[in-house]
Image (cartoon, rainbow, N blue to C red; front, side, top):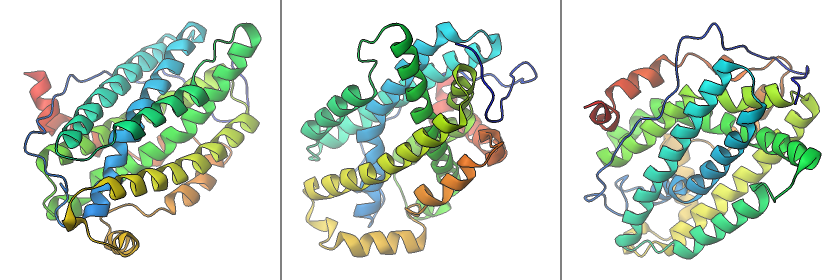
Amino acid sequence: MAEQAGATQRRYHDEAHAIHARDVHFDFDSVPMHYVPGEALATHIVNVMHLVLPEGERAMAQALAEALPYIDDERLREEVTGFIGQETMHANSHEAARRHLQSIGLDVDSYVGKVAWLVDRILGDHGLTGRAKEEWLKERLGLFAGMEHYTAVLGEWLLNADILEAKGMHPAMLDLVRWHGAEEVEHRSVVYDAFMHLDGSYARKARTAILASATLLPLFIVSTAYLYRKDPSPQKGRFWGLQFWSATRRGVIPKWTVFLTEMPRYLRPGFHPSQLGPMDKALRYLAHSPAARAAHK
């Protein structure tokens, strides 16, 4: 596959920061059902990560692994390898959180199985070969690049959402989502650059980004509704719509309009994920995260 023009490309030979997987571990034993106190719906919106992301991140890591033989830029290969390791660790950590929530009464196994089946059917390699395999790999990378834009934006939000700490969010879950968010910011450019290296077509970038946005929003809505419905706690309240409006207004959850407002920025000619802003706060968090620090010991 040859690199093509069509959008901003970035070389890695001037970069000094190396992406690597952190062998983190979280203790979820004392995490309650509503680990953002008094915020049942907000808790379940965060919980979507424990349902949807593990399977999606495994699929993304698989696509990047398939792309490695086509990447001849040594620095980009290094970043892709580090990215695969980080996404695998994300999937495993969130799966552990999901198992804990399952053990205290949030019965989601059947839904997780359906998500896994859907991800495999839609985003798997489908056993293709030759030119068809290469074209489908480019398409998947375009989709994942669009999705990663949103995870980077949400990662920035998590790092800056002081209200979660003020609300008394359980420390283990707060560390989990902020560690994940920080790594999303840290590796925000990798999938985009892999896509640019293998393809770089603006038409494919635009098409797949719009499709990614149109898929993620309803998936979050459906998954949150399912979790709220399966929540066995009588303290969850009755009116999830009012909870959603209130949590959004108070900044306890991101605004859903992010799925619309971010698209013009991503589609702007010359855009690159590094333009989202400095990653200093993300790297500082990764240096001080309890789980990340424990990994260094």
